[in-house]
Length: 170
Image: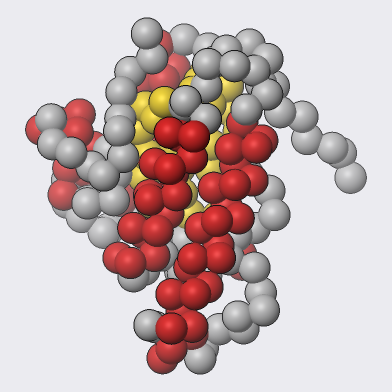
């Protein structure tokens, strides 16, 4: 098996994607989506990171993030996935027990890997941001990207808060 390499020395933004284990729809519930965004917000603050945009789908998450120092991405991703996993499992066990009965709670919440794509230009960042915001439309969840509550599209189209500080990279 070829070992993936993450390039986190260049100061680029990163377009990241990670999925639920076996592509289960563990993020169908709004409370689970809130957990993912809450941990994202907390980890960005702790690591002085910036989120350019995000979308939380029923079975995966995409985000564009940037950090001021090299080699922060892997720690950020580890903590984001680890902390959200613990909190989602607690949610399933304590509040969504009917849904949890259909699952094996010993399975992980997230697939082990995440996918990272370095964004080396403003044009590439805009391209990925627009594509990412269209995910809920392409999945048939909403008619317009701005109608999906779990993405940064409302911030860009309407200037509204989306629960995570979103901003452009200077």
